[in-house]
Image 1 (cartoon, rainbow, N blue to C red):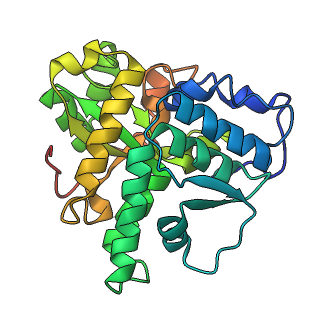
Image 2: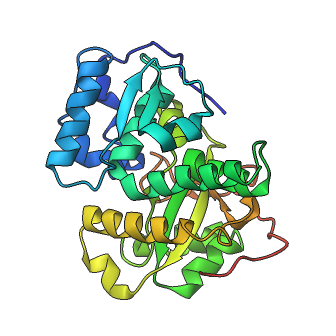
Length: 275
């Protein structure tokens, strides 16, 4: 995993935005163009802007800069609505933007941790690990074609990325949730992977514009996360070599897709099924 040094600004703070990785953050493009790292006033203004845009954010939500909570991180958020946010920190910056774009899902993920801690699961186990993996590295993959869904389950990258490349955006797509992926995207490299969550949709879903789809996925994912019997272990998330998705890497030729160290052909022992 490669990270950029914290506190290091690119030439323009918003230089991370053009890549498809950041499409789910696109509504905040203009409001998030700062000349320097944002502080409390900038975080407050960004949150107010998202609320003015109609995002269903929790009423008590606030990104509390450099707060050191006395409770567990998730318990503090659950009890106060305050998200401890380190300044000059890419990970927490993208975590805040993820809250703006996935407000219902982020709240549902935090509530999952709170429920688990309250029933005694203070340490990490499969249930909390699955929630954390989705929160950090999750890519929501809506799909209306079972063949494409099975290609992802079977790690059939030639079908998924090459033979059916034209179906991306039409029958299958990617909506990134994981804020660690947003951070890692500042230093993309061959070998970079995310964890995909397949969600079946009707064909009509892809007639919506990208942001409408995003909002529908946010509401649906939040509803699914309310059931603690769903996504109970990390293995239910699927490996996804991110740079294989059409348009995610500048040179996607036969040699690129022939790299079996990146596009591993190993079939998963237990194929997941669409929910």
